[in-house]
Length: 337
Image 1 (cartoon, rainbow, N blue to C red):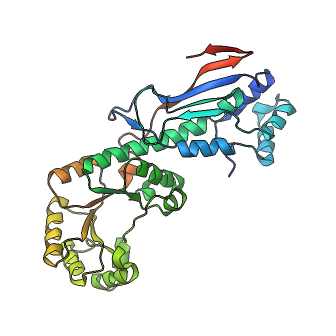
Image 2 (cartoon, rainbow, N blue to C red):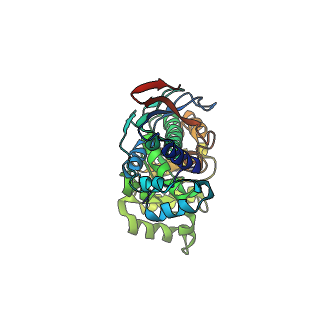
Image 3 (cartoon, rainbow, N blue to C red):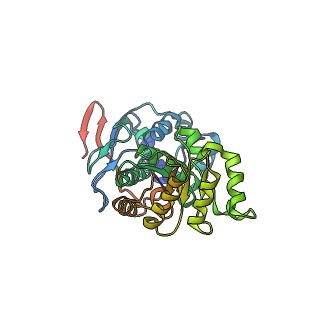
């Protein structure tokens, strides 16, 4: 998919200006970094590099895109030569970057890009977007995983992400941040992230009884079965799951007081001879709630975290910047930062 237009207009008008000013031979060096960390973050995990590389390797403009640009009033005085140049544009520069998952601090470059000036200028918007978003989510994931103290965390937030595509990259970034997997199947296919899923309340409610719903789910999923047991009465749901027995991976709690419900469910499962059956907790979780549950010694094995993770709700943006630090022209180098 061509991504040449996935940028701000001023990147392209500047590119046209560089062309008209005879600056094609000049080379710029740009660094991408964050000036200040969000107030509730003391580090940021780098993520999004793979998409940055993919973008640079495939940067080009189709004839349809160039025809569109010609219609814009901002290019009324641009010579035809620029559009011919744009049709042949490929990234020929160099990219240096820290590995994904590297903890970063203020004013440390996530990446350095050195290329002919036009090739270095146009990618700014895309690089800021992909590095900023994925690093923000990976950092949130790292906080959640740390709070879980060794218990597994799965990213469940695609339905609350800012777009379906954001949900895919949130799943990827969360995995970089330490999550065990994601509910997003596209992230699984595209990036090899382990995928997880249970069933919704609508599944249970679509059958004449909770037991029938559980039986049908077990028939479908076998050893991957996870019962959502709080559609009606959580403890009764746990008893029905215990009665059905193996094959069974676990049960999920999505509501109620988890501090009191989790031990009661654990006892029901253990008394039924199912000590290996896992308890998953979901429902508006974040690192603070998980910390409280762990501190209370709630016997929860897996946390499914959705909205707060896929949007990094308490720090929903990362102020990354992309600044030119060196310009090479006519064999002379000038530092610009």
